[in-house]
Length: 339
Image 1 (tube, helix red, strand yellow):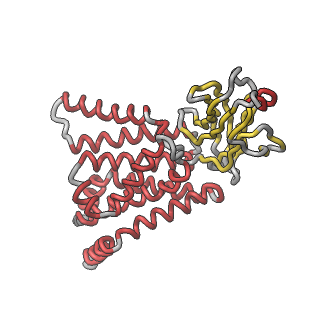
Image 2 (tube, helix red, strand yellow):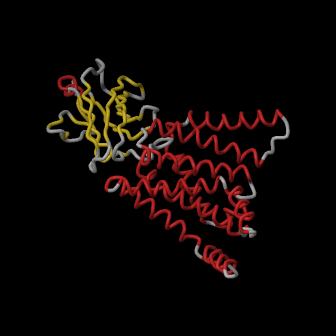
Image 3 (cartoon, one colour):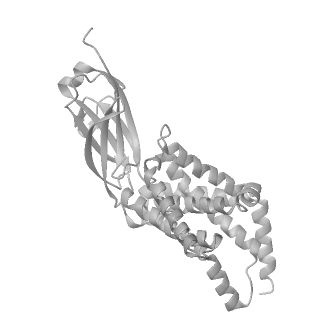
């Protein structure tokens, strides 16, 4: 027992000297879990469970440290607690970033969410930013805390519980709201009923805001491995992918939007191919996909009922049930009647 404080001090010194090691470990575990989603989903689930257990520790930190002090008559050093909190933020952020990097549609609003995660990860490994800029601003610290938990849940829930992306988003949002309320209450003590109502409204506003911008949040465990816009699909394989097509061709045979979507093993998900012309939706077709196939689950829609004048810029947006964008296919229909 006498050697414990010395060991703790050594750990703290090593963390100060090599802060990037924790972040690197989290990033490598994220890469490993990302690969294991396809190959050994069971092991990936255990990695995700360990991440969530670490978050439970963080949420119950004050209770557990008090219990430790009463049981062993010894206080856990505050520097160790600070570095434990920082380590959990680093591990969680760099665990989820590989998933969000691969699933983000970069020319959409999803760039904002993934950019925030990347910025949070950078802040977590730069001590002057984390301790001197972020930590003293309690509301910013809580915002990073909630964002990180939300992203970790979005990644872990489909792997652990085989929930659909829509179910995972709702549950992650509810959990993040529920766990952020005690943190807000500890920072802004409830002295009267007005403050209690205000905290409830702030918590609900956070949840409502998260729901409104859900299209900006990438579906962490769904990504497209192959896409094509083609005039044919044979033996579950598309023909040549087209970026430009003559109007006369689609009026006779229509067009196929082909997508192969990777999903965790055991996950069954309904998605939509939303056909748009010049930014206006003209068709929405539902598809059911099943996870576990390394090359992605192959699905396509065949659109034949085009408008009388189909010339213009087209998109096929691939969406989850709640409107999160998995990806987008773009092509242009050109007028060839004058040729």
